[in-house]
Structure formats: structure tokens, C-alpha cells
Image (cartoon, rainbow, N blue to C red):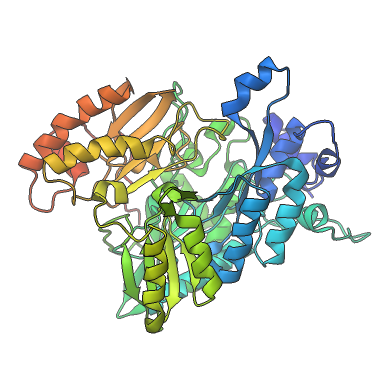
Length: 567
């Protein structure tokens, strides 16, 4: 197969991929090396394609250095679930694996995946095999390939939702890597002699960087469509799926001090019919494969490919490769990018309960035994479990007669949706950050709840406790919790220090803007309180917080809004 790097100046990562024997590397030898808890640097990059990141416990870093020990290496593992749906039986296996091999908790991610932390190298293969035995997989949840495809996780919300869920699953399966390396390394399948691996789409060096696809069904942008490399906005006509508006070039990551990196929202470039979706998606991925930056990984996402060459060039290249242009985009309207909590009746006559899970962490603590509650519900085997794009959980397919049993279990474990939670808390998201993420500069998931406690006091004092304000926090600027789409957004700069961003739209189609840098907690509260007080006094009927700070010129637009309509 032709190399993507031949004759070109590329990054070291490109050479590692090219020489990996289609993602095999020396992972097997590294797993069997008892002298260290880590893999080699090259294999740590390769293992991402298999669904894992090598990390270490940063809380213990200084102490282990004093004792002249290597870092306490461990592995994060992601489980792929297109559209975020798992059966009760699958949940019980994942719950058990978290206890047996992980740190006892599960993280529901902002991409509708499960994430385990604290897995030792010696247990990694057994964990991956057990996941595959449940008919789930970890393949391509990380790495330079298409990741998990997102959509609303309730196909029974309408007939349109059911069709879109099916499309998400089809794309998710279609764009998985074709190499057999995963099955050989983790599932002990024999390599077939004389049969060469091939990657018809990805080629030998795969994509320049990760690639993300999502579907959104107006009026709900509950998966933050414009944050994705490729997005499909559902266009409905008389209760039927007419087709999709195509959006390209979204991505949240940036690097502090590098003005050539930035968050960007996707541009709407046209409309397609349902039967064109696989071809269009494959063509767009092919353009990124061939033209993405393979020298500087910080500028390797599709958003930079588009900005470097120009959106008109991208649209023309897509038309050239397909031998026909897209149709003009059709009107649509988004209201919110949040979740609707509580019970919802589906088109199949069953009930679906959206449960608030603060920052997606499924764990037990005093008086709040979420993990035990969901285990008890899954043990009933009377429904399924669904992950939203906002780190929450839907208990799905529950019959009318079983609703009270579900509520009783949630209430007995102290996890039934608390009516005293402010709308700010219910619209919050945070990435993992410390202690496991090696990229984090500051706390996020472990800190944001306590910051919201203090902000709640201000909100209640000003009658804003029911005002839905999106608040997002990340421990670094890579954007895993989409902090750039928070009406109030925080990005960690150092321990206890955060940049404060304001002014994203409530429906996810406008980025926020830097307001103040390097704030401590007291400085954060001092900066936000007068703005919240004035918002309570001066907001217009139905005016969201992000729109208010723009109307009052507290911040002004700086980045692309994702609303550009290209014919």
C-alpha cells in the first residue's frame, strides 16, 4: 500500500504509524515485560488506536520520585457505543470490570463512551477481552481515526430519531479500522498466513489526527454538533427524514501561547439526501487524509485543513471528488444543547428516565450510591442504559408498571434527580483532569462541584437558581468537556488558576470569549458576581446568559460562530 509519508516532511508520529505493521508495533512484547508497568513511547502511541491511553497517578508522583520508583503507570480504557446505548447485561459486566480491574468507578464521557481509569498493564488484556465478550469494543475510541459517532441516544423519541440512530451506527461501524491487529493482540485470534492487512480508506498512516462525527436533530443540539469535524443536521419534512445539512471543521482544542491553534465551530456547507451520507462522509475523510497537516499535530485537525486552504476550496474539492456539488443547505433551528431530565414516553410505549450524573462519574459515596443504584436497576433486566452527550444517563425502555420500582431504587440510593439542584449545576460538564490525565494543568471534575456550590449561593440570592446557564470546565485547553461552548467556561492554567471565558450561546452555535486570565477561586467569584447580579436585574424575557453578556458588550465575538451557510 502506498505510504502517506513518502517524500514528505512529517512528524515522528507519522513514521511510528507507518512502521507499526498496521497498529501492531511491539505491543505484545511490552505487555509481557514484567520489569515496568509502562509500554514504550512508540507503543503508548499505538495503543491509543486500540482504545487506551497510558497514564500515571499524578497524586503519587512526588512521593514515588522520593522513593526512586517509576511513576505508578496505569491505563485509561474507553468503550465504544455508537449512540451510547448498552444493555443491562453489558452494564453489569462493565460495572464488575471497574471494580475488578479499574479504580472502582466509571466515567460517562462527552462522546457517549464509557471510560475506565486505573487499569494496570497486567490487567489490560483481560479487561479488553471481557468487554469484547459482551459484544462491545474499545477499538478506535482513541487514535488517528474516526471516533465514536454521536447522536441522541433515544431512537424511540420519534421515527426520525430511530432512523438517525441507525445511520450513526452504520457510520460508526463502516469507518472502523480494517486491520486485524486488535483481534490478534487482545482476543488471541491467529494471523491468517498469506493474508495482508489493508486499509482502503485510512491507508498505512491513517489520518493526520482524530476525526469526530455527530448527528443532531433540531431543535435539540444535545451533542454539540458544531464541535465536530463532521456534523449532520437532521432536516425533517412532514414527519419524515428529508436529509441532512452537512457541517465541517469543528474542534475545541487549542494550545496556550500558540495563536495558530484555536477552537472553531463547524461551517454548514450544504444539504444531502439520506442515501448520500456514507459516500459524503467517506469523501470528506479522504480529503482530510490527503490534505491534513502531517508535520505539526497541533494543526492537524480538519478545521486547520479548511482554514489553511479556504472553505471555498474545501467545498470545491468535495464536489470534484464526488463529481457533483452539495445542494443548498436548508433552514433549521436549535434551542438548546442541554438534556431534558425526568421521564419521557417513547414511540414504543416505554418510558425513559434521564438521570443527572454530575460530570459523568459513576461512583458511590456517603448517602449517594449511584453505582449500586444502577447495578440494582440493571439487575432487574427490564430496560437498558443510555449515555447522553452531556455526561448524563438515560434509564430506557421501562414499562409503565416498572416505573415506580426504578424511582424507588434511585430514591433509596439517594440519586433520584434532586429538585433542589440549580439549573447551573444541571447544565455543567467537566473533564477528568487530575489525577489521571497527563495533559491537565489544573483540577476540573474534582473541583467544579465545589465551585458551583459557591456560585449557587449567588444565584439563589438573585433568583437565578432555575435559569439554565451552561458551565463547562477543563483542566487544559484540549477541550474534552467542550469548555469553549460554555456560557461560563473555565480552562485550567495551573493548580488553582483558571482562565474565565464568557458568552457562548445556549444552543451551541457560538463560542465563548476570554474574559479574564489566571483567576483564583476568590477572583472567579469576584468577577462573576456583579455580572450575575446585573443579569438578574436587566435580562430580557427569555434571554440566556450568553446572549446577555454580548448585548451588554461584556465580551465580543472573536471566533467563527458555526452559522455560516454555504451553498
